[in-house]
Image: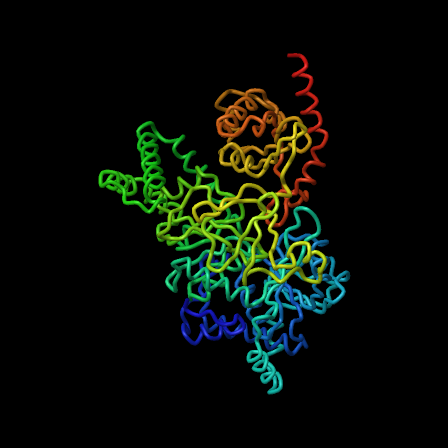
Length: 612
């Protein structure tokens, strides 16, 4: 660890160490190139923001909010606020007006910083409903302000307010720096709210401080690393990893638009990037697609390379065993002609390690990524635990399907229904202004109840299900929908899956297919269709998907298998309220929207069964 000081001091201390060395990178879309920001500029800009916050009268532990996609300005704001003991609250860039109003009022936010036009338009439309709002500050100069807007200004105008700070304010800045307290609230992160109204998770400086220490113990991270920030900085996983990188002096490359991540990977060639399993599932699907489209000779070579790499990883590397010389040479040969090309094509040719969390990683995906020589670090954590609870550790055996080993000084035990209970210095003290909710989640002995079920085996943690998501069929069998969904979404024809099973006689699913591949299949088979809806109901298409599903769920118990499904003609979306800001499915919303189709599917299945 290069510098695990209080976050109020971090940027200023790192600037003294690194000076004009690059701290942050971002793509300038007008010039279409990546630009560097030095530690000196980072430090100077954070201080200007801090001085303006003081001049506007923000007191110790007042709250500001940042409503933006990943931009350097987000970092400037966070560390400017930390400098003067003001708490920062990040909003997802896709938050709706009603979500913004709720969070603004719940946290009594006085100053709201917005990124681009979309966030500004949302904010200004609900500004009158935000009880404590004094100012809206806009990052992007290209944002067109509403004609009736009297409370907004651009960031450069905002910073100028503090430029002529007198001695009193300078003394106040130094006083707050000197009194920076590890028990202060650094951030309030609002949960995505899959089951109801979101809660503000309190993250203190001491939680970050401990998280930096234990992650440094578990991972080989240093100032030579280049980190691509792909997930929203609103997400505790990305936020924590970016701060860990800053403590090490590693370069942070901020990916502004999520859809540009593959392009950014090739341009930045990062050594590290935190991500969710769905990203690697897409890589896995892309590799299988490439194999399927290759010539017979290429297909044979790539298939053998894949088989060799997986064998090498599963039987030797993952178990920290030395492979036989013949296998080592065989793997090196395929690595040179196949895997190195794949890594270079993806922009992962400089890879150090790539942490992933947020859901279980399908074993097939994990095996292939490691086989390709990519050091994926599977982990587990929550907002309430400052991200990492467990992760794979170099030099220790790794079992595909696990979520790694507990990080140093995290306590764990298992409660009713094998619920994972956690205790330690990285665990939140509670939810902002929600005493009863906090008491429901953190018991009298300080154990945080995660809602996740799992078990430990040989020092590794395994997740089994999300307890709240457990379904019970009408036959009394318990179903873990997420486990089934993760099995099916590794198929290249399947984009999204929502399992239906609660109080039903059998398991079914709503499936969003890959429409492009479905249309390609139809062309190859000479299937004519008038609309996407017609294509999704085409018997030969349904038969093909059914066969693929049967193959994927061979190892499931009979009562767990998807027996019937509906192909949806449009994807689940944020706009329709079916997904949270972290792209988790809001099951209740989806079930309500497709209630008629679901009932019809079960009724038809009953009729067909009765006729047999």
